[in-house]
Length: 145
Image (tube, rainbow, N blue to C red):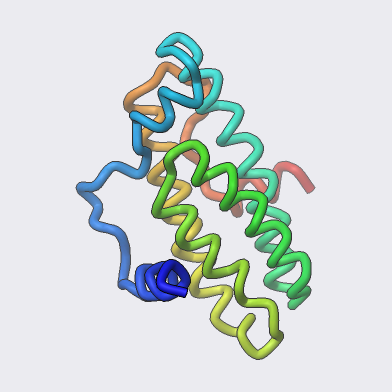
């Protein structure tokens, strides 16, 4: 119960401080296994998260609560496992929005998810040699149709 209260109160904060790292590098390095694998892991995380976030955005727009919960759960799990703690908190908030009346706030929370994902991709681009360039989800959605 305390964890849920902590997650909910953290998700209601205006936004994460921009000077904090969006990636806990100790956790990310542990998951990658070694520094050489970190760019590959960053790319894999970004590609999978981007794919699920596009679907999540569509589910929010369509008001499909079960899909919102399922997709948010998937990305939250991989985000938490890889050390993207602020991203995981926001996605857990979306995951709990399973009743239609609560989905009204989902678009607002999703906008924060988009900003956090952009911070993660920028962090990877600036700190790891990856082939991913930060991109807005809307631009990605247009190219994937």
